[in-house]
Amino acid sequence: MSDKSLFARLLRSSWWVSFIVAAIVGGAGFALMPERFKAAGALSSIPFVVIGFLAAWKQRGTLSAKQIDATLVKIAAMSARDFTDTLASAYERDGYNATRMAKPGSDFAIEKQGYTTLVSCKRWKAATHGVEPLRELFAAMEKAETGRGVYVAINAVSDAAAKFAESNGIRVVRGAHLAGLIR
Image (cartoon, rainbow, N blue to C red):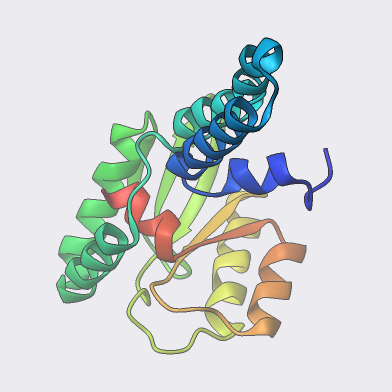
């Protein structure tokens, strides 16, 4: 399905939008069709109802914009130790084993199904995030012989840092994803 199609756009929008479109299409189909085709006109809304249910299923458990903002404000007010503890607990709640590390470049390691990922979150409050902390994480990843890393930040990383992260197996967790992880 094309990303620009109506159904793809409805899947990305709030679930209730599809139900409004379904009501409009079904109502218009019922009102504008001749008497013997009114049922078919009303049934023309079924694809939009299905898309509405699919969107609702995909969006279950996601945070609203207000909830994301409130969570990010709470995160920003935390001390470094509290934030690290909260983040480690969030990963443990999601089924990972979190192990504290006192090594440069990473704060703790998470392990699940035999895969180890190093997590760096000590600079999560920084206003700007450059390449240097990502290089430190990458060096720690090489030393630990793991190809996976997570860099946690409230604010955006620079373009150079984003390219470095993408090319070196580092996932940047920030914004809505961070708020959803912390919940």
